[in-house]
Amino acid sequence: MSKTETAKILLRGLVTPSDWTNPVPSRELKQELEKYFGTKVFPVNSGRSAIYLILKAAGIGEGDDVIIQAYTCNAVPNPVLWTGATPIYADVESETLNVDPKSVQEKITPKTKAIILQHTFGRPGPIEEIRGIAKKHKLLVIEDCAHSLGASYKGKRLGTFGDLGIVSFGREKVISSLAGGAILVNNKLFEEPVENLLKQLNYPSFTTYLKEFNNFFTWRLLIRKIFFTETGKNLLNFLNKRDFFNVVTSSKELVGEQPAWYPKLMPGTFAKIASAELPKVDSINEIRNKTARFYEKNITNKNFKLLKPHDGIYLRFVVLHENPEPIYEEAKKRRFWFGNWYNSVVYPGRVDIEKMKYTLGSCPVAEKAASQTINLPNFPTISEEEIQNVIAFINSY
Image 1 (cartoon, rainbow, N blue to C red):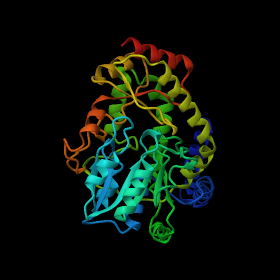
Image 2: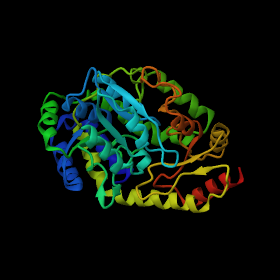
Image 3: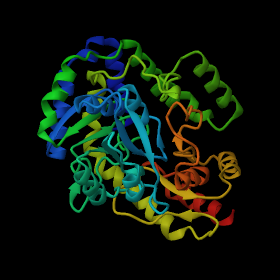
């Protein structure tokens, strides 16, 4: 689906507001995802909502612990906090940036009820090890596939190994409906509890739609063209201060509080976009993977550490450097679209990590990786010339 087609759906939604609360597109998306995953799927308005609803359906709340990995986004610990439970951070493996099973084992206590297994940037996590630990201690396994839509492990789609799982259709994910996500239910015990929770939800306000509309068109028609200039920076700050955009992380989420728009149902307008985007998953992942393989083959500067190759997908291509900030600054001057997922042990860096229940020093491997993280551009429309220019920059730095 082209950006022009997305724009048409958004414009139709503007003149036909009833599309926003039309349940038919969400039901159609549900059917398409169930065919894709071969399991029960329930669309919702975000990956955050999906995690929160899964935990509620499992009866997890006050007094319970949920193990997650450090080197993650606040979108994972926040839903845990919203239930009244406590996120317990396990460290990661330096070669994968996925959770270290040994650290998970060390964190388990009688209060532990579940493990959220994150497939970081599309790399399959230690599925067999985590399932073995969970079985031994009678814990739920919840797969976080926000980065890994379309990835498989041993011929089976990620998201179908745990008791439950989530996917995201948010900005900068494998496919984007601007906002949205889904719950995957592999354990039939949780089908009815999830369905009952969904019956209690309504749709986000139409104001949410208007802000996403602003995000889409303002970015594509103006900000993207002046992003690397001082004017672009000032304009973004001006609009953000006036609540013009629907921000990815709200001020409440920065301190562990729950915004009113989580959880909600999947709006019809966004479900239409997700359905139109879904057939592109494999082709998008193939382009990203091809770019990643090219980086792996041609980056030779030993000052940059590349992670071990893998057979998942590459939503982001990460390199590590002891002093990343000057590299970001120089890349921006050259108009390279470098990213910073996750340059903080709980991303973004402006979150209150104490409110996220993270203790500095508790996950040293994750903290070191976060301090060195750089994302090289591997978006689907990147040109061969741009890739070559990035490689030349890295190799000569």
